[in-house]
Length: 71
Image (cartoon, rainbow, N blue to C red; front, side, top):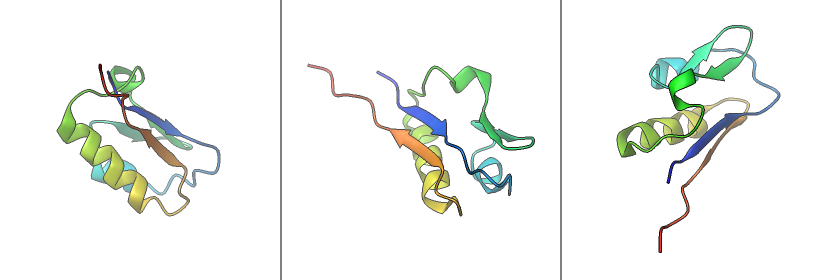
Protein backbone atom coordinates (compact mmCIF):
# COMPACT_ATOMS: atom_id res chain seq x y z
CA UNK A 1 0.00 0.00 0.00
CA UNK A 2 1.07 3.55 -0.61
CA UNK A 3 0.91 6.66 1.54
CA UNK A 4 -1.21 9.36 -0.07
CA UNK A 5 0.03 12.95 -0.12
CA UNK A 6 -2.31 15.83 -0.89
CA UNK A 7 -2.04 19.61 -0.90
CA UNK A 8 -5.32 21.21 0.13
CA UNK A 9 -6.56 24.71 -0.68
CA UNK A 10 -4.72 27.50 1.05
CA UNK A 11 -1.18 26.91 -0.21
CA UNK A 12 0.79 30.19 -0.34
CA UNK A 13 3.49 28.78 -2.65
CA UNK A 14 6.31 29.56 -0.21
CA UNK A 15 8.36 26.65 -1.58
CA UNK A 16 9.29 25.12 1.77
CA UNK A 17 7.85 21.71 0.85
CA UNK A 18 9.84 21.61 -2.39
CA UNK A 19 13.03 22.57 -0.57
CA UNK A 20 12.46 19.76 1.96
CA UNK A 21 11.27 17.11 -0.52
CA UNK A 22 12.02 18.14 -4.09
CA UNK A 23 11.41 14.57 -5.25
CA UNK A 24 7.75 14.89 -4.25
CA UNK A 25 6.70 18.54 -4.51
CA UNK A 26 6.91 21.23 -7.15
CA UNK A 27 5.66 24.78 -6.71
CA UNK A 28 4.15 26.96 -9.40
CA UNK A 29 1.23 29.15 -8.34
CA UNK A 30 0.67 26.60 -5.54
CA UNK A 31 2.39 23.38 -4.47
CA UNK A 32 1.68 20.23 -6.47
CA UNK A 33 2.59 16.58 -6.07
CA UNK A 34 4.90 15.48 -8.89
CA UNK A 35 3.38 12.99 -11.34
CA UNK A 36 5.29 9.86 -10.22
CA UNK A 37 3.93 10.29 -6.70
CA UNK A 38 0.33 11.29 -7.39
CA UNK A 39 -0.82 7.66 -7.03
CA UNK A 40 0.97 7.36 -3.68
CA UNK A 41 4.39 6.83 -2.15
CA UNK A 42 5.74 3.47 -1.00
CA UNK A 43 9.36 4.39 -0.22
CA UNK A 44 9.68 4.91 3.54
CA UNK A 45 12.36 7.60 3.18
CA UNK A 46 10.12 9.62 0.86
CA UNK A 47 7.15 9.16 3.18
CA UNK A 48 9.29 10.56 6.00
CA UNK A 49 10.22 13.57 3.84
CA UNK A 50 6.55 14.16 2.98
CA UNK A 51 5.62 14.02 6.68
CA UNK A 52 8.40 16.47 7.51
CA UNK A 53 7.15 18.86 4.82
CA UNK A 54 3.61 18.52 6.16
CA UNK A 55 4.75 19.22 9.71
CA UNK A 56 6.65 22.34 8.65
CA UNK A 57 4.10 23.73 6.17
CA UNK A 58 3.20 27.22 7.43
CA UNK A 59 -0.40 26.88 6.23
CA UNK A 60 -0.79 23.21 7.28
CA UNK A 61 -2.34 22.29 3.91
CA UNK A 62 -0.18 19.20 3.23
CA UNK A 63 -1.77 15.95 4.37
CA UNK A 64 0.01 12.59 4.44
CA UNK A 65 -2.25 9.59 4.89
CA UNK A 66 -0.41 6.48 6.02
CA UNK A 67 -1.07 3.28 4.12
CA UNK A 68 -3.47 0.86 5.70
CA UNK A 69 -1.71 -2.11 7.27
CA UNK A 70 -1.92 -5.27 5.23
CA UNK A 71 -3.50 -8.33 6.77
